[in-house]
Image (cartoon, rainbow, N blue to C red; front, side, top):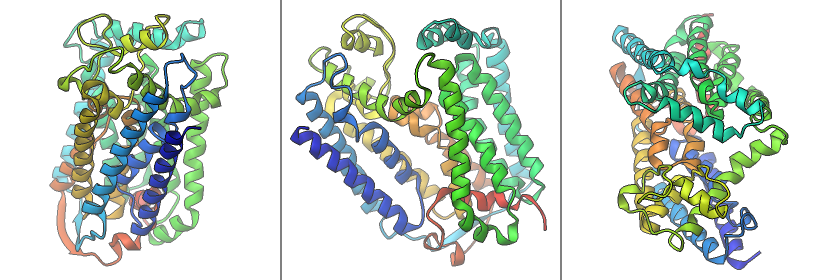
Length: 455
């Protein structure tokens, strides 16, 4: 292990410990702390130790660039934490009570998402490719090749609703489910469960066309948490949740792991599904970052400031794409799409300065969202984290614009606007002060869902 690799490991490990300590002291998990911990754990900390021998392109120079990239991320997060989160306590809490107008907004939002699903599934002809990727994989075809073949056919023409349908799955449906979880808390639990079931079925049908794995995991884990929450009664909600929080976390983790193993056993034929899943979550983001840092600027020129937020799959054109990088790292053998996280993609556009700009955009987004929800109750803040769950792997594996399109920041704006339409009064903090709440997401989330039954 080289000195710079050791420094990289110690820097990321110390940062994770610090952020965990801050969450514990605040008794509150914000979107900023959640995404920064997730990005460090999946896209930064293992960077010097993976991909060094794969294709023999990583050297001390690329590892040094990775350390600088981690340093930019850690310093930016530490300054943001000190400036915007350290010892900031809300003096009042905004009370929210759903009304007729808010229910009308919820119904309109769901109708817009359902319309997008119909356009994508029927008008675009997506139903014709139902199960095509899965069948191709079982027949021995490469998983990514089968996905790209279906995507090329669906996006051959514009105006067919592909973007509308995928946006409905990644942005609108999570908001509808989260808002429904809060709105239906005064009714019987079947009201919310029917809404969640409809949203999950819609999401599953949509992602089944291309067999994207991460949305399926999150879509199926959510109803389990809601079902566990419905078992608690409102009068002893918080106490029961604090006593049984590990059961809730264990239930969610078990379902997540079981579904993940099932999906990876079908898509990665002949490989260990557990190792494939862990490799995809913790190692692939670091490996692809290695590729980007090794390819620029020695092999390819920086793609320019206009491309720091996104990256296409061009091959042999004026602007370097993911397939060009794949050709380089595999010495011309493969031409797949090695997507990388927001900072590695920004580096390929404008070097370390591009990373700083994207870092500022990311920090601005999380600070705005956390400021919007800072004065709401713990259950509403937890709902905001819930609808951003899918954005965690997207920030580590895709450019910043792709993360926005896949559920980062935008769903929180939808939810914030909806809550603004039904906010009632401002009360004293009292027992709702963040320092009086348990330091975990499900405690707030399940407190909001917990009133599914009337005593």
